Length: 351
Image 1 (tube, rainbow, N blue to C red):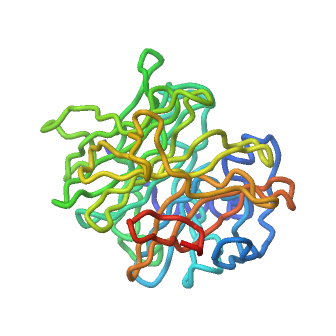
Image 2 (cartoon, rainbow, N blue to C red; image 1 turned 90 degrees about the vertical axis):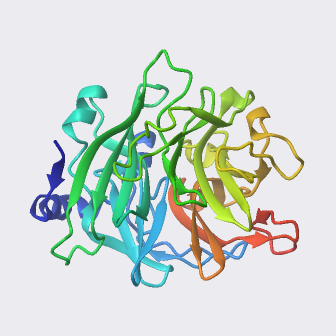
């Protein structure tokens, strides 16, 4: 039976947790608290947006625009939420979290874990769908769950997060890892869920448009990307459609190490949502291919785990990076993508 997280419950918890929104999973991973200090981000070498407000402590951001408000959901206890009306100044939403801890079913499968990782927000079939994962570091005993809501406006009487339960899971005998979900609608409006981290890489399942869970019409577990170097480090898929192609963004190498993080985003593309995805040089992402999109700077280390916002003909890349001038704090970053004549994205303004 679906569990409903009422506004009264979530609002009560938000009063306690809102001030700690900057903690996120990165705070847990690094073993310290992260303050929610407003830290403006400079433009740097790329055409970054100048962000202010509640931008620290953001790990694994996912973004959506609902009416006149942007919302970012990120890793942390209860799935923290931030909002903005201009894409530049961010504040904690109210409620500041989506739910209290993790659902009972997830806690039973993954004991001792109260954080939800890498949420993915989308809208289809007249409801907002929030996929999220629960796991522990270094383990592929993982689950992906689903929450739905009719609206993201907490002042609306219809606002209520509904726990739809388990979507997919992996166990120790599997060669893949069910974390980092991302939903994409193909050109026919069919929903697909990409996910994966390390092990044998990025996977995909077709979903049922009504339930938001794996479809019985196609039980195939598709493989999209894989690496054999750096411990097989590929994760955090995000897929968009643009100009006749599906673009698969992933993160390579290692996050969650503060200024020592080596995370960066790479991309490949395909004419079919299930692949094969190839990079700019024609290398299949199953064979380790991927064209690099984000690059570290002296200040911003490990720029990765991205989402893409498509709006008015512009694609914005949304991701976190570790601020070397602020003790390696994970911080929200947003920039418009540049597309070259051959349809490849970058953060550079010289192509």
